[in-house]
Amino acid sequence: MPAVLLLAGVSLVAGTAVANEAAEAARTYREQHEAAILAEFRDFLSLPNVATDTAAMDRNAAWLTRRLGEAGFDTEVWRGGGAPYVFAEKNFAGATKTVLIYAHFDGQPVDVANWASPPWQPTLRPGALDGGGDVVDWDNATRFDPQWRVYARSAGDDKAPVVALLAALAGLEAAGIAPSVNIKLILDGEEEIGSPTLAAVLAEHGSALETDLLLFCDGPMHQSRMRQLVFGVRGSMTVDLTTYGAIRPLHSGHYGNWSPNPTDALIHLLAAMKDDEGNITVPGYMDEVRPISSAERAAIAAMPRIDDVLREELALGRVEGGGKRIEELVLQPGIIVKGFQAGGVGPQSRNVIQSSATASLNLRLVADQDPATVRQVLEGFFRDQGFHVVLEDPEPEVLRSHERVLKADWRPGAYPAFRTRLDSPEAARVIAVLDSIDDQPTLLTPTMGGSLPIYLFEAAIDAPIILLPVANHDNNQHGRDENLRLQNLWDAIEVYAAVLAGYGRPGSP
Ligand SMILES: [Zn+2]
View 1 (cartoon, helix red, strand yellow):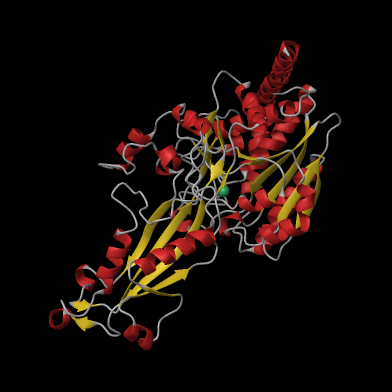
View 2: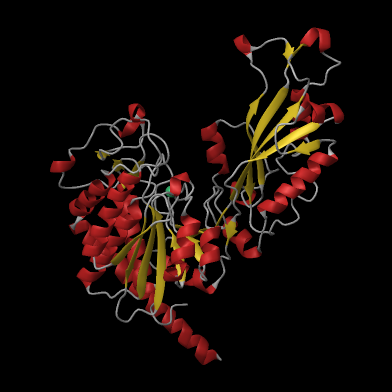
């Protein structure tokens, strides 16, 4: 027994030593080729990439097909009826594992007038604030400050991974270090509109994605800029709730105190769903929620605390959760009132009782909550609160024959959360590889608060899924002046090189 342990220990050192060597080789290569790496990034970012513009997305797919082909990948463009997906694969002699990498190459629509420079005219600027300051003369630059940022749509979200991966492979090749894994890429051309045809694409091509690990390379890194792995995302649902009064607006003086006000009814209902600390008080709502594991608690405790800095920055006099950290609170489901419509205010206010009031609710789900069950529990709760629940606009007869009527309009696009163990053997392997890059520990985040439809991959492939974000947290993703800090691109190259060289080395943990 001790001999086996000893052997495992020795092998672990060997695997991580190669990962460390690979990261250093990637750094050396990058230092010698910064202008060329950035030129490639600039070229890719120059292609407009709004997912609904299929012709534009085809040009992006063609760019990827050409560049990945030049780097020795076999590529295919997959279609499910919308924007293209690009699949690419490259095998290496001696590889012992396969790693599948997800990234997306579409970006959010832009309001060009708000940008400091045009979104598809990548621009290098020295800073982060006010559009980044004076434009750097990119064409004639010979050295690149790592704090400079590339400003362009999708610089941070999510065109960097492919460029970093290609640079990492070139760096390994230059140093004569063989990747220890075969690489597959699944590049999504419609993530920003919710990947509407991903399910169809996976149904047709899912078998090609067989892998030992899926690295989901999207999303911003931790505010501390420390290296980070994320092990889950929340799910998301939207429901619009409408309450009803008289079928026409009534004079608030003549009929106030007599005709029920739908605004009051909706406020009372919403107030009954949560307490002042944000805890959901709907009976049964929390029954399915997966408890926080001891490994997850330990990982959260090891993260730098950001609550106070955020509170200061956001001018918040208090936060919810009764003292729990934000990393723990996003492991709980959330019910967020994201809009409320019930008559006007200020100059638009009129002395009437409205006929209806509507609130739009975003439900953030966590692991093991089934959207269908959530819906059932909520509709049961509405009935317990005295409402007759309908799914479409009620006829006057329905309003006459029930004391309280509530319309629940469940919006399309609901999907569940995803969360994987952070103490699995596969996770241990990735963590060991990343930790070998330098003496900085890797932050382990049990879940991010936001949502991605990772559950589709969970159903399609039989392998652990871990998120590996590379973009700076302040990248302005989805907004104007989106950017990527050069150091984040440089770090991504080293991270990928370490994973490619170390993950499949025989005897990694
Ligand atoms: Zn993204």
